Image 1 (cartoon, rainbow, N blue to C red):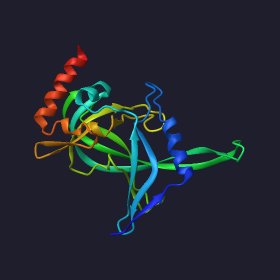
Image 2 (cartoon, rainbow, N blue to C red):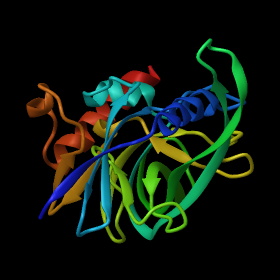
Image 3 (tube, rainbow, N blue to C red):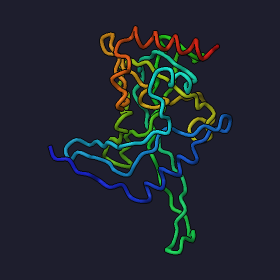
Length: 227
Protein backbone atom coordinates (compact mmCIF):
# COMPACT_ATOMS: atom_id res chain seq x y z
CA UNK A 1 0.00 0.00 0.00
CA UNK A 2 1.53 3.29 -1.09
CA UNK A 3 1.42 6.18 1.30
CA UNK A 4 1.85 9.83 0.42
CA UNK A 5 3.22 12.51 2.68
CA UNK A 6 0.96 15.51 2.32
CA UNK A 7 2.03 18.98 3.35
CA UNK A 8 -0.73 20.97 4.96
CA UNK A 9 -0.88 24.55 3.70
CA UNK A 10 0.61 27.45 5.59
CA UNK A 11 -2.89 28.81 6.05
CA UNK A 12 -3.96 25.59 7.77
CA UNK A 13 -0.89 25.71 10.00
CA UNK A 14 -1.60 29.29 11.02
CA UNK A 15 -5.21 28.31 11.53
CA UNK A 16 -4.23 25.62 14.01
CA UNK A 17 -2.14 28.09 15.96
CA UNK A 18 -4.93 30.65 15.97
CA UNK A 19 -7.52 28.16 17.18
CA UNK A 20 -5.10 27.21 19.95
CA UNK A 21 -4.81 30.84 20.96
CA UNK A 22 -8.59 31.19 20.95
CA UNK A 23 -9.31 27.94 22.80
CA UNK A 24 -9.45 29.45 26.26
CA UNK A 25 -12.18 28.93 28.79
CA UNK A 26 -13.81 32.16 29.94
CA UNK A 27 -14.13 30.75 33.43
CA UNK A 28 -10.83 28.98 33.94
CA UNK A 29 -8.63 30.38 31.13
CA UNK A 30 -7.30 26.96 30.19
CA UNK A 31 -5.36 26.44 26.99
CA UNK A 32 -5.64 23.28 24.88
CA UNK A 33 -3.18 20.44 25.08
CA UNK A 34 -2.88 19.79 21.35
CA UNK A 35 -0.37 21.53 19.12
CA UNK A 36 -0.57 19.77 15.73
CA UNK A 37 2.31 20.10 13.27
CA UNK A 38 1.94 20.52 9.51
CA UNK A 39 2.70 16.97 8.34
CA UNK A 40 -0.13 14.59 7.49
CA UNK A 41 0.40 11.03 6.28
CA UNK A 42 -2.42 9.81 4.05
CA UNK A 43 -3.08 6.51 2.31
CA UNK A 44 -3.96 6.59 -1.36
CA UNK A 45 -6.27 3.57 -0.94
CA UNK A 46 -7.79 4.09 2.50
CA UNK A 47 -9.00 7.60 3.21
CA UNK A 48 -7.17 8.39 6.40
CA UNK A 49 -4.66 10.86 7.73
CA UNK A 50 -2.39 10.92 10.76
CA UNK A 51 -1.02 14.16 12.17
CA UNK A 52 1.96 14.27 14.51
CA UNK A 53 1.59 16.44 17.58
CA UNK A 54 3.23 18.19 20.48
CA UNK A 55 1.38 18.45 23.78
CA UNK A 56 1.50 21.34 26.22
CA UNK A 57 1.06 19.07 29.25
CA UNK A 58 4.21 17.09 30.05
CA UNK A 59 2.58 14.91 32.73
CA UNK A 60 3.52 11.23 32.38
CA UNK A 61 3.33 9.46 35.74
CA UNK A 62 -0.04 8.87 37.37
CA UNK A 63 0.69 11.30 40.20
CA UNK A 64 1.52 14.00 37.65
CA UNK A 65 -1.69 13.38 35.72
CA UNK A 66 -3.79 13.48 38.90
CA UNK A 67 -2.47 16.97 39.68
CA UNK A 68 -3.65 18.28 36.29
CA UNK A 69 -6.94 16.37 35.99
CA UNK A 70 -10.35 17.70 37.01
CA UNK A 71 -12.03 14.34 36.54
CA UNK A 72 -10.73 10.76 36.43
CA UNK A 73 -13.11 8.02 35.33
CA UNK A 74 -13.40 4.53 33.99
CA UNK A 75 -15.75 4.85 31.01
CA UNK A 76 -17.05 3.09 27.91
CA UNK A 77 -17.78 4.62 24.50
CA UNK A 78 -21.54 4.41 23.94
CA UNK A 79 -21.84 6.82 20.99
CA UNK A 80 -19.20 7.05 18.24
CA UNK A 81 -17.40 10.36 17.57
CA UNK A 82 -19.47 13.16 16.07
CA UNK A 83 -17.35 15.53 13.99
CA UNK A 84 -17.95 19.27 13.88
CA UNK A 85 -16.24 22.08 12.00
CA UNK A 86 -14.82 25.13 13.73
CA UNK A 87 -14.44 28.07 11.37
CA UNK A 88 -12.42 31.17 12.13
CA UNK A 89 -10.97 34.24 10.44
CA UNK A 90 -7.22 34.48 9.93
CA UNK A 91 -5.20 37.62 9.11
CA UNK A 92 -3.40 37.77 5.76
CA UNK A 93 -0.03 39.54 5.64
CA UNK A 94 1.85 41.08 2.73
CA UNK A 95 5.63 40.89 2.23
CA UNK A 96 6.11 43.84 4.56
CA UNK A 97 4.25 42.03 7.35
CA UNK A 98 1.24 44.31 7.08
CA UNK A 99 -2.22 42.83 7.52
CA UNK A 100 -3.99 43.28 4.20
CA UNK A 101 -7.11 41.23 4.79
CA UNK A 102 -8.56 38.07 6.27
CA UNK A 103 -9.16 34.53 5.15
CA UNK A 104 -11.53 31.90 6.51
CA UNK A 105 -10.05 28.61 7.71
CA UNK A 106 -11.57 25.61 9.41
CA UNK A 107 -10.57 22.68 11.60
CA UNK A 108 -12.20 19.39 12.58
CA UNK A 109 -13.03 18.38 16.14
CA UNK A 110 -14.91 15.29 17.31
CA UNK A 111 -17.06 14.71 20.40
CA UNK A 112 -17.51 11.20 21.83
CA UNK A 113 -20.09 10.19 24.42
CA UNK A 114 -18.99 7.85 27.23
CA UNK A 115 -20.91 5.99 29.90
CA UNK A 116 -19.17 6.51 33.24
CA UNK A 117 -18.54 3.17 34.94
CA UNK A 118 -16.47 4.34 37.91
CA UNK A 119 -15.38 7.70 39.31
CA UNK A 120 -11.94 8.19 40.88
CA UNK A 121 -11.91 12.00 41.00
CA UNK A 122 -14.51 14.70 40.47
CA UNK A 123 -18.28 14.52 40.12
CA UNK A 124 -19.18 14.01 36.46
CA UNK A 125 -22.62 12.87 35.35
CA UNK A 126 -23.21 9.24 34.35
CA UNK A 127 -22.64 10.23 30.71
CA UNK A 128 -19.84 12.56 29.60
CA UNK A 129 -18.67 13.98 26.28
CA UNK A 130 -14.95 14.04 25.47
CA UNK A 131 -13.52 16.23 22.71
CA UNK A 132 -10.65 15.40 20.35
CA UNK A 133 -8.88 17.17 17.52
CA UNK A 134 -9.64 15.48 14.19
CA UNK A 135 -12.53 13.63 12.63
CA UNK A 136 -14.24 13.16 9.29
CA UNK A 137 -16.37 15.50 7.22
CA UNK A 138 -16.79 14.81 3.49
CA UNK A 139 -17.46 18.48 2.81
CA UNK A 140 -13.85 19.20 3.77
CA UNK A 141 -11.90 16.09 2.79
CA UNK A 142 -12.21 12.42 1.92
CA UNK A 143 -9.63 11.73 4.65
CA UNK A 144 -10.33 10.74 8.23
CA UNK A 145 -7.96 13.01 10.13
CA UNK A 146 -6.52 11.72 13.43
CA UNK A 147 -3.87 12.75 15.92
CA UNK A 148 -1.20 10.04 16.06
CA UNK A 149 -1.23 9.62 19.85
CA UNK A 150 -4.92 10.46 20.31
CA UNK A 151 -6.78 8.50 17.59
CA UNK A 152 -10.53 8.72 17.37
CA UNK A 153 -12.43 6.63 19.91
CA UNK A 154 -14.40 3.60 18.74
CA UNK A 155 -17.78 2.33 19.90
CA UNK A 156 -17.53 -0.13 22.77
CA UNK A 157 -13.95 0.72 23.79
CA UNK A 158 -13.31 1.08 27.51
CA UNK A 159 -10.84 3.48 29.10
CA UNK A 160 -9.53 5.04 32.26
CA UNK A 161 -9.36 8.73 31.41
CA UNK A 162 -7.66 11.68 33.10
CA UNK A 163 -9.76 14.62 31.96
CA UNK A 164 -9.74 18.40 32.01
CA UNK A 165 -13.15 20.06 32.34
CA UNK A 166 -13.60 22.63 29.55
CA UNK A 167 -17.32 23.17 30.12
CA UNK A 168 -18.24 26.72 29.23
CA UNK A 169 -15.37 27.12 26.74
CA UNK A 170 -16.52 29.95 24.49
CA UNK A 171 -15.59 28.11 21.27
CA UNK A 172 -16.26 24.45 22.00
CA UNK A 173 -18.74 24.34 24.86
CA UNK A 174 -20.43 27.67 25.54
CA UNK A 175 -23.62 26.02 26.82
CA UNK A 176 -22.71 22.41 27.63
CA UNK A 177 -20.44 20.14 29.64
CA UNK A 178 -17.32 18.99 27.80
CA UNK A 179 -13.99 17.36 28.63
CA UNK A 180 -10.64 16.62 27.01
CA UNK A 181 -7.79 14.35 28.07
CA UNK A 182 -4.83 15.91 29.90
CA UNK A 183 -2.59 14.38 27.21
CA UNK A 184 -2.12 10.87 25.69
CA UNK A 185 -0.60 9.57 28.95
CA UNK A 186 -4.01 10.30 30.48
CA UNK A 187 -5.74 7.90 28.11
CA UNK A 188 -5.48 4.26 29.21
CA UNK A 189 -7.35 1.73 27.11
CA UNK A 190 -8.56 -1.37 28.97
CA UNK A 191 -7.97 -4.68 27.21
CA UNK A 192 -8.62 -7.93 29.11
CA UNK A 193 -7.90 -6.39 32.52
CA UNK A 194 -4.70 -4.84 31.17
CA UNK A 195 -4.23 -1.14 30.47
CA UNK A 196 -2.31 0.50 27.65
CA UNK A 197 -1.31 4.17 27.67
CA UNK A 198 -1.34 6.12 24.42
CA UNK A 199 1.63 8.25 25.52
CA UNK A 200 5.16 7.45 24.40
CA UNK A 201 8.39 8.43 26.14
CA UNK A 202 11.57 6.92 27.54
CA UNK A 203 9.64 6.64 30.83
CA UNK A 204 6.85 4.54 29.33
CA UNK A 205 8.28 1.28 30.71
CA UNK A 206 7.48 2.51 34.23
CA UNK A 207 3.77 3.04 33.50
CA UNK A 208 1.17 0.67 35.00
CA UNK A 209 0.07 -2.17 32.73
CA UNK A 210 -2.85 -3.67 34.63
CA UNK A 211 -6.03 -2.16 36.05
CA UNK A 212 -5.28 -3.00 39.69
CA UNK A 213 -1.92 -1.24 39.61
CA UNK A 214 -3.31 1.81 37.81
CA UNK A 215 -6.28 2.12 40.16
CA UNK A 216 -4.00 1.76 43.19
CA UNK A 217 -1.75 4.55 41.94
CA UNK A 218 -4.77 6.75 41.20
CA UNK A 219 -6.24 6.20 44.68
CA UNK A 220 -2.93 6.99 46.38
CA UNK A 221 -2.30 10.07 44.26
CA UNK A 222 -5.83 11.42 44.79
CA UNK A 223 -5.41 10.99 48.55
CA UNK A 224 -2.13 12.92 48.37
CA UNK A 225 -3.79 15.63 46.33
CA UNK A 226 -6.62 16.01 48.82
CA UNK A 227 -4.38 16.39 51.86
